[in-house]
Picture 1: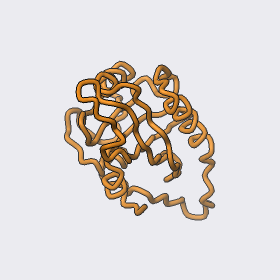
Picture 2 (picture 1 turned 180 degrees about the vertical axis):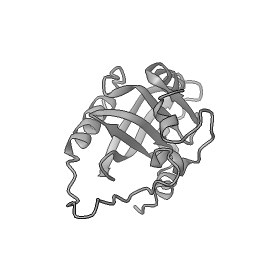
Picture 3 (picture 1 turned 90 degrees about the vertical axis):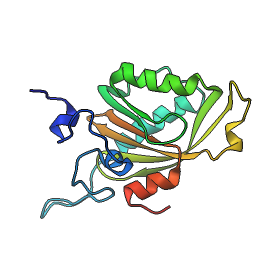
Picture 4 (picture 1 turned 120 degrees about the vertical axis):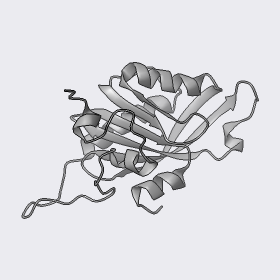
Length: 179
């Protein structure tokens, strides 16, 4: 019997999930963007630690430094929902493999955060813009639609799931949010 996070959340390995399910954490039945407190409990969760963690990740990424992974759980789920290299990887090694597919295609690749939104106790949404130049084509990312979004799922001070959307509108739709 496996104790993996995805199986304990009711997800079978190799199960295909929609972008909306991935953004919500993959657990069927969870509602994105809503936090329902228990009866009689004041809904004032301490979320600043999660936001601080995500801001520290982007501080490195905006400089083009993608070398750190100490912010991620060892079994992190890394997902690109759409864009030129969609896919899903597990663990730190898998995350590095997925990231390599981006770095191998682009020179001087950077991701800039433009807005942060705390969605609930576990999720931080970041509106992003990518820059770089295609190694083979010479095409600048700025010439393409590069306004994306990332949903970070944070548990116990570490990222447990990182879901990236090349298309910001798709992320908002999957999360049931408006810009």
